[in-house]
Amino acid sequence: MFAEKSWGSYRVLDVLPGSLTIKASLTAGNAMNYHSHSRRDEVWTVASGEGTAIIDGAERSVGPGDVISLPKGCFHTVKAITDLCIIEVQIGEDISVEDKIVKVN
Image (cartoon, rainbow, N blue to C red; front, side, top):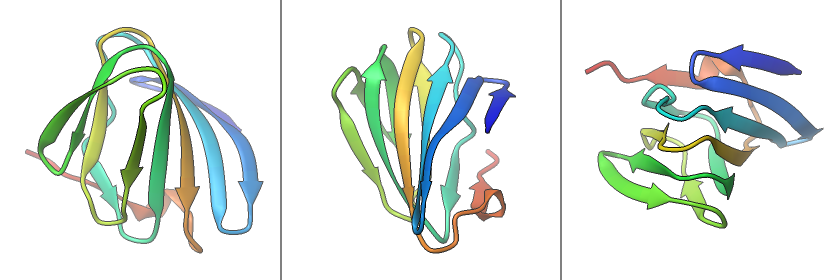
């Protein structure tokens, strides 16, 4: 329940009916793909570090203690300025990796 990614790594912290909680660790200078989900909402809580979140094209600086709600269907990503740790709670009845829609520029 741990995976290394091009942007850093993630670890599954908890699995409950209708929710999945992960810890995403991004290394400085990296970003997740710009993507959306059709069957789940996400809530990000920034635990440490600094970054820039992009939600439906709008940029926002993020840092420790910031909470970002991402409703299903919105496109989103985060870019790490420093090493960045985010606790992500995925909420939905059908949480699956197949629910990721990557937007290509």
